[in-house]
Image (cartoon, rainbow, N blue to C red; front, side, top):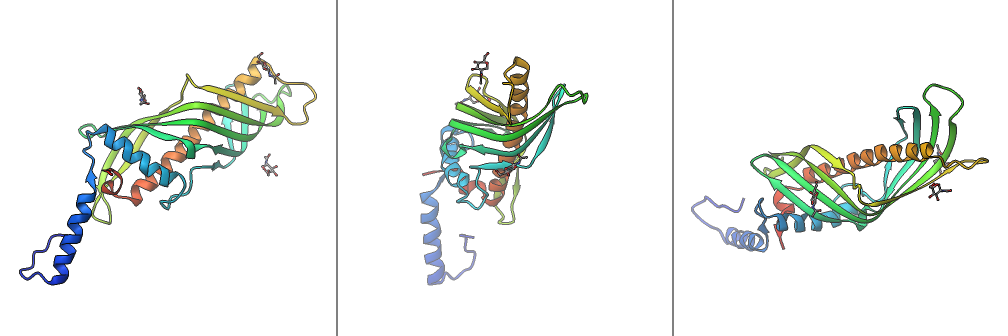
Length: 234
Ligand SMILES: *[C@@H]1O[C@H](CO)[C@@H](O)[C@H](O)[C@H]1NC(C)=O
Ligand SMILES: *[C@@H]1O[C@H](CO)[C@@H](O)[C@H](O)[C@H]1NC(C)=O
Ligand SMILES: *[C@@H]1O[C@H](CO)[C@@H](O)[C@H](O)[C@H]1NC(C)=O
């Protein structure tokens, strides 16, 4: 667009050329091997993206529709699912391997929490387990880690866009995760190992679902911005 192939440059075209050149000189694009540049530019993009300043729905809070999680012995219903705290996170690593079309993306979060209303029933239908309640799960200093495959394509703006084709999310096993689950109208206090395990397993599933939603938002963002609008040095 900045290239003028006409033989006669009008004054307007000269102004246009100058404008384009100065705009380009402000933005130095990241080399895809430059991990520091990629990480810093993703952190910059993240701040706008997470608060929906970039046109993609905010990721803080995130909501998920009711779902049923099939655990080995128990049917676990999770409703009113909310995930809070993404806006305090930082992108600490973005790495891209262009030859293999792989990426690595880590986000460090000082404080996340997940809230839900639950009901659980024994899978075999016995009356041993049949209860409702709510949980608050708190994650302190949690590192969200994603690795996966991406591809690139020419967008309708005729620029290169990236898209995440597949990913694997790895939970942070070193972080402190605190569960506070309360049975509704609880007469007897539930706190058996099994009962706590059930909530922990369900929470793991739910976290995966929230991360799927997050990655979906990341892809919406990547669709809306060309790679040169994201990966540049300031
Ligand atoms: C979800 O939250 C709303 C509002 O707080 C509440 O009225 C409703 O009962 C909740 N749903 C479940 C299944 O607990
Ligand atoms: C990013 O996550 C990977 C695992 O996917 C880990 O090996 C690496 O140490 C992490 N790096 C940072 C800076 O968080
Ligand atoms: C449940 O049991 C665990 C370990 O036995 C204990 O640390 C925790 O405080 C108990 N929670 C409640 C709500 O009683």
